[in-house]
Each structure stands twice: as C-alpha cells, then as structure tokens.
Amino acid sequence: MSSAVRTEQQESVLIITLDRPKANAIDCSTSLQLYKALADFEVNPELQVAIITGAGERFFSAGWDLNAASEGEAVDADHGPGGFAGLTEFFTLTKPVIAAVNGMAVGGGFELALACDLIVAVDHAQFFLPEGQVGIVPDSGGVFRLPARLPRAIALEMMLTGKRLDATEALRWGLVNRVVSSEKLLATALELAQQISTSAPLAQRAIKELVKLGESLPLAGAFTEQRSGRLPYYQQMLESEDAAEGGKAFAEGRAPVWKGC
Image (cartoon, rainbow, N blue to C red):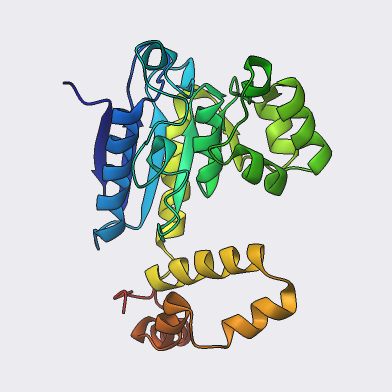
C-alpha cells in the first residue's frame, strides 16, 4: 500500500503533506499515518513546528473518504488515537502546528485545519462544513472549534446551511493568519514556522498549555491553576535554563541559544 502521507524535515520544521488524489480525502488508514507523523514529531527534539498541507492546488482535503464509506467504513469508524485525520483528538500534542491550506477545506478537511494552531491559506481557498446537508454533523471537532474561532452566529450559519467561507472572509474574521498566492503558500508557512522557532521550545509548549487552560476555565480559575504547580510545561519553563538565557542574551545584545531545558 502506497503512503498517503509524505514528510520532509527543513531544519526544525516538519512538513507533512497529505497526498491522496483526487481530493486528499481521509480514511482510517490515512488518519493513522497522519497520527504517526505527528506523534513522531512530538517526541523528536530536533523539531519545533509542523506544517500540514495537501498535494495539488484544488483540495487541502475533502474530508471523510466517501469511497471508503461505500466499501463499508462506518461514519463512526475508529480512526486511531489521534481521532479523525490523526490530529482532531490528539489532545496531548504540545508543539505548534500550522495548516497550509492549498485549496478547499471541506468537512473533515476543515476540521483538520481547525485542529491546527495557525492557518495560512491560498487566495482561492474555501472553508465549509456540508455535513448537515447530508444528514450528519461535523463531529470531528467542527461543532466545538468553529464557534470558538468565529462569532457564534457566523459559525452556526456555516454549520446549519453549509455556507462557504472564502479566504478573504476567513482572514477578516481572524480564522486564518495569512492569505497568499499558491506559489507563496509553503514559503509563507515556513517563514511563520521559523519565526515560531526563534522562541524557546519550553515557552512554546507552556503557551499552548496555558491557552488550553484559559479556554476551559474562568479567568480567576485559570490564574489559580497556573499558580498551582500542576502545569508541567509551565513549571519546566519557570525552572529552565532557557528562562534565564532569554534575559541574559538580551542584556548582552545577542541572540539567545535555547537548550530546551
């Protein structure tokens, strides 16, 4: 069986490409391949940021593979420990992930992009969740993540009607970070990844840890938990050599040298 997922390392960045002609649709096997790529990324100390993109220029991903469904793969099939697309339920992933959306992000493909931390999109990208129109719901995170990223009314309209959001609208609503031409997509995502990589690795993980905390607790409760000593990456960051290195490098007028400890 040929791999539907290709990986390439560029310095501290891992590029993960979903390559399943014609629409980069995702079945259980593909979900497991994506999860493995991300799980390996998580434990590799050389890597700080991952980019997920699709092959071609038409589809980032069309979502669930309907051909697999016609062959018996159930709508609630087990897609592995990371959930659909290997990422939508990979809740322990601590490193940042960028979606480089090269075309249409449809259904589960949009849910994969929403599971990423940042999104760079081509100018002809479209984002939509058509599940309600075919009798199901976007239950690989879309129903939870989209209202957290967009105004509630806009998110509900998209889910209830299948409304498409183009790249310009997505940028205006703050759903995506950059909109660029096809020729500049990967270079822009890599530039963003490299900017992230200038931050200390433990600080990156602590930021994600604290953002996730703030999404689940009221502000006062989040502060209490932050000071509890129970947050592993925040505590490691506070006690790390890198925390001291940042201030020292600034005082000495040089770039910091991060050790990740």
